[in-house]
Length: 218
Image 1 (spheres, rainbow, N blue to C red):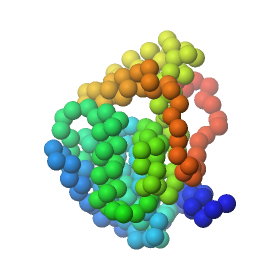
Image 2 (image 1 turned 60 degrees about the vertical axis):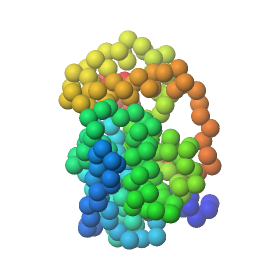
Image 3 (image 1 turned 45 degrees about the vertical axis):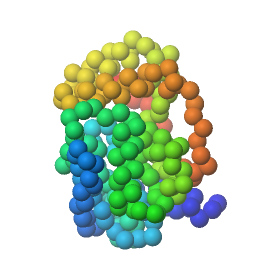
Image 4 (image 1 turned 180 degrees about the vertical axis):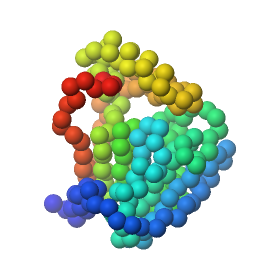
């Protein structure tokens, strides 16, 4: 097992730990808006955290504390979430990837990073890996979403997917509902179901194998 792969499994293991670490807030200028990022630690390995749909940087607080000062940890809120600004328009996947790239370029210029993504953040992490494999030491994916998952879900139970979409949109604030509509438009596009070639990047996958008997959503 090579050194990069060992580092990934170490990172995955320390997700269960908790400690204390001081964080510095950094603003990443995106022209029409600014992203609010948090940076902590000063280790040789840079770990960048990408949150799930509708979540800010705070969800990674205990994980970053577990990593401590020995890792250079970066978390941020996507446009319109937390303290990050927005231009008022729903963001497409490509726009979120451009923002993620700007965060990495600003806070870890010239460094390869370990990119950690949860749910929608996992989708962004894998898409970033396809486009910028040279920027990565590896990926840690936590219950990641995938580009082709809605096509698979529709084949299994199209009526349930439609019902879930209706329920979820009713729960979301207007701006987030607009973001969700743009997201599912992209995931429902014919090209989304086509498997994409992934680069040779070390990956650690963290997911549950227990299936809920009555899941809230599919």
